[in-house]
Length: 115
Image (tube, rainbow, N blue to C red):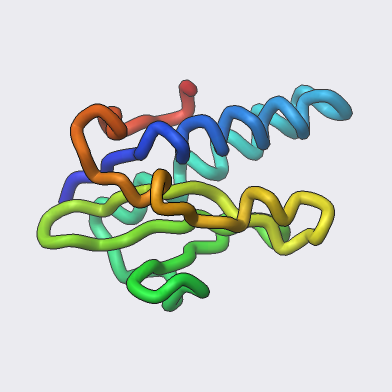
């Protein structure tokens, strides 16, 4: 199964890593690697996460404070963004219509640890 990221998901990831890096750059690198590994697992196990808060989505928790929000459609896992279980970063929890845009202009290829 292929894994595709929306542009907003890539931006969410970059924003979270930048936020963490302000206080602890090494923790930011480790968190980015953790996100990458979790998303890579979805290629072989797309139903690994639980049903999401937004109907039709799923959520995988690679860390106690964060979740990957995604949707499975046919042979594709769409990564929409990252959510936070911490109220201070609740803005990342929203999956907007833009975040669920599957048009080629809103999608990039599979990502690993690099942003």
